[in-house]
Image (cartoon, rainbow, N blue to C red; front, side, top):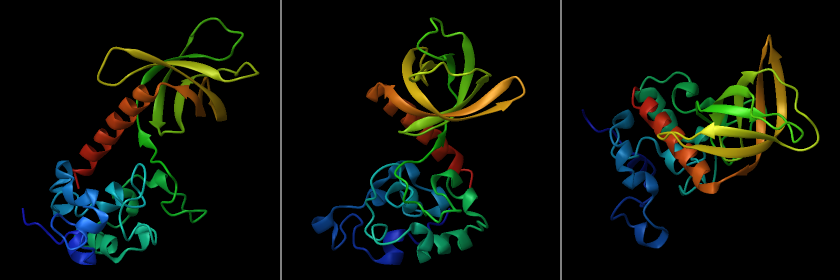
Length: 220
């Protein structure tokens, strides 16, 4: 498989390994993301920089050009889309990470990634059991959405969750406020703003979800 032009070659930022600016500003994470090598015919993360160091990264923006403008306006991303025959940005990276209608291109802090975790739910502080069964749909650092048997939250205060951690049989406890909720027949689809979740467990869920997304991107 032939390697095509990488972001540091296209934009001449000098932040590749051994580049003229690598000592001054550091090597760009895209240049050393070996686990992404081969994606879209690039070296390391050189043709997926928007998701590793750019405005669509799950965390702080570290790319030099991405600090100045959205990656959606970058000529290199447009070039990759053309060369890889990508007609719709939804094919390239999760569409949910920017809000097209409000034009908030990629400046939201966190990606919302698919994460299917079994869970039981306690709908309020006056209920003693986790009697409602559900499954999470997607997850980010600030919250998650889920589908479950329909229920009505018992005010006041957050509802509690017991969810199974990925790659293990262990469970973790979380709590959060219901931000929105839609009833669908005898079930509901809801979004939660997290008020408590152990930091290590949250990292495990996010790492697992991101790894699954990376594997999905490899099919392109």
